[in-house]
Amino acid sequence: MNLRRITLKNGADLDGFRKAVRWLIAEELAPQHVVFAIDDAPGLFGDEQAGDAAPVSLPKGVARLIEQVVCHHDPERYALLYQLVWRVLNGERDLLEVASDPLVHRIDLTARSVRRDLHKMHAFVRFRRLKGDNLERFAAWFEPEHFILEAAASFFIDRFRSMDWAILTPIGSMRWDRAMLIFGPPASREDAPGEDSFEEGWRGYYESVFNPARVNPTAMRAEMPKKYWRNLPETAAIPGLIQTAAQRVERMIEQEATMPAKRTPERALEAMWDQEPKSLKELNAIIAKAGPLVPGATQAVFGEGPAHAEIVFVGEQPGDQEDLQGRPFVGPAGKLLSKAMREAGIEREQAYLTNAVKHFKFEQRGHRRIHSKPTAGEVKHYRPWLMKELELVRPKLVVALGATAVLALSGKATPITRSRGRARFGAYEGYITVHPSYLLRLPDEATKREAYEAFLNDLRRIHDLAQADLDTGELPLAAE
Image 1 (cartoon, rainbow, N blue to C red):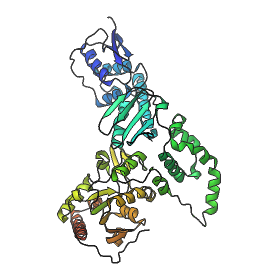
Image 2 (image 1 turned 90 degrees about the horizontal axis):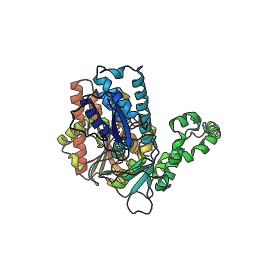
Image 3 (image 1 turned 180 degrees about the vertical axis):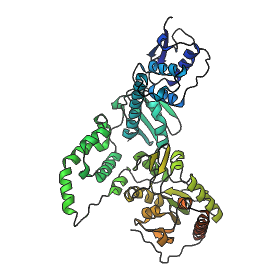
Image 4 (image 1 turned 120 degrees about the vertical axis):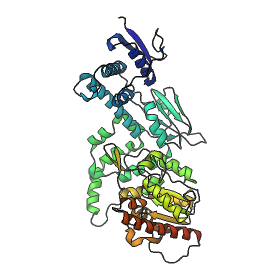
């Protein structure tokens, strides 16, 4: 039998490979009778014409591997994948479970390499403002090892949906204009913008949280390979931080008895904006650009509601559903809050809802992402953004839902049992109550009903306070 030549596009031609597989399986062509080639302008099957072949049913694990491996730069990737497909469809349905099989082992290593490259792109892309443009537009330079642009696109759209950005690479480029994603030709590093004023603030933040007592250059290079260093603003500070680490540790030890070390990342974060944001949209763009200060989140979850709402509700942090949807209070706790607000006469659409921490912090347990409480330090890192958010909304009343919100608003850790009720958060009249997730965690229905009624009474009081002129009497909690 003559060899059949299959020509696919250069890069990650997933659609072309799927179409080829359907045709080849319909023709019952074994891998040894097929040659895969790559061309920038292919005719899909050379001299062959593809018909309407029936779809091929594959295990989910095989389908996921195909999506990853087609992104690899190995020119043999399509031939390897077709061998896998052929064997799975011809009596070896559970082939992927045989880790010792040479084909499975090689494909698994290839997929891992692609996943590592995607992880590095997620971690090490840094956007810079384009100069000479009145619009808020940003660009970044990255050098991937594989053809991962299309695979990485959804991550950056989800995280930076409100920004106008482009990512330039030697293998291609992509541009998001807040509405449409466009893929373009390869670029050079000179096409990307140089350093912008945001980077000075980011370096300041990095230096403020750098712990000289835990310096480990080997581990740092393993997590942040040198090939990415010239694209990351914080790396300019690393040599000096490492060189002075020993002296800084000695000073910390000497000063510990009289003056505990105190980091102030707030000023570094505030320095990230070129000019102070004048609107929530401008503030949200800064938060999105900065990325998560806690590990794991897929996107920033901004506040939601009227720009000048009378009531602002502040929670702890987004949950799993909030992280996926990009909106605050849409998970189980948010639905309970909405129900209670309706019963108390508060229209959710007329209130502004936000969180002290803007990204979802979690622990992965199997396929589930379990909420992980933010530390006091993480709450402090986000506090400048929360306070700027309140300054822009200018609410009549600020409601702290739970202890983390109280800490963020007041700078003090205060038990809810002692502080529940009216409060003052700096310049803002406030009210402290439980977070609705607390009600969901209660062990029995009777306790839940009692706690829900108390929560409902708090919301009724909040509704009344927002409707009336707040008096200026003494309140139980004062901010720093």
